[in-house]
Image 1 (cartoon, helix red, strand yellow):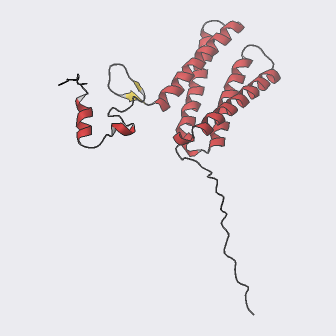
Image 2: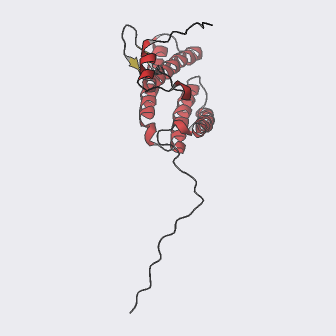
Image 3: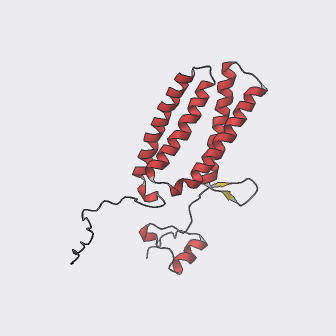
Length: 183
């Protein structure tokens, strides 16, 4: 008689399987995935739809401080530029993420491209570049962001909140024909 070492699984996984709520053979797991960031000292999680725009805004603010500082503005004014950049891009990013579920794929990609292009173009102008050169750089970076975000949104359609918004059908529907009126 052979004895195999038994693998000990957590009590919640065993209890869930005993009640038929988890089917591990179909890829389900008893533990829910960790979504969001945990606040220090609490058990609450900050949703990723809030945390990622805030992190991006802080990073953009720090980059703005660096850009302004290297252009010659030192101390407090450089920090104010960075703070203003972080607040504005953070607010616009949170607004975009909040309403992105109501947008179709192309509109959402344009919105991300416009926010990114305008932010990077403005930041480029802080280095003393001309307005035309800054606008061109921002337009180019916005176009790159549009293409990248459109690619990401199109290849991950299963995760879209509204699914495939334009299903292709081979069968066309015809409107019923109205009979001619008899006089």
